Image (tube, rainbow, N blue to C red; front, side, top):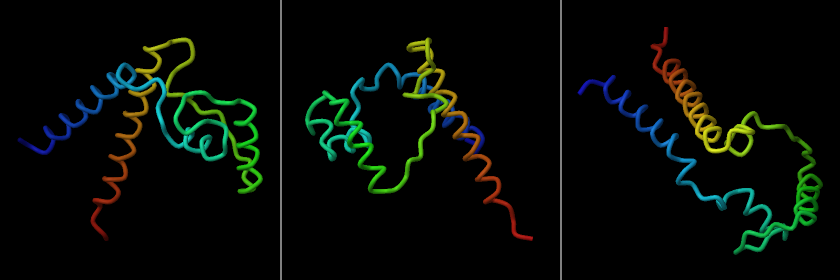
Length: 116
C-alpha cells in the first residue's frame, strides 16, 4: 500500500472513533477536573457527588495559590453543541478531530521542509 492509502485509512479510523465516542464514553469520566476536586475536598475520591460550595472554594483556593484567575468560555463546552444532544456531541468531536488532523498536517509539512 502507498503512504497516501495508510493516511486515508488512519483518517477514516479517527473519524469512526470520533463518531462512536459519544455513544461509548462514560457519563462520569474520571479526569483532571475530578482529581482536582478530590484533592481539594469538593468531591469524594470514590464517588460522583460534587459539593458545589466546596467546588467553588477549591477553585478560589487554586486562584489564591497560583495567582491565576484565567477563565474563558470553551467554544464546544463538555464536547457538545448546546441544544443538539448526541448529534451535537458527535459533531463537536468530529470538528475537533478534523481541526487536530489539519494542525498535525501543517506541523508535519513545516517540519519536513528541507533547510535552505
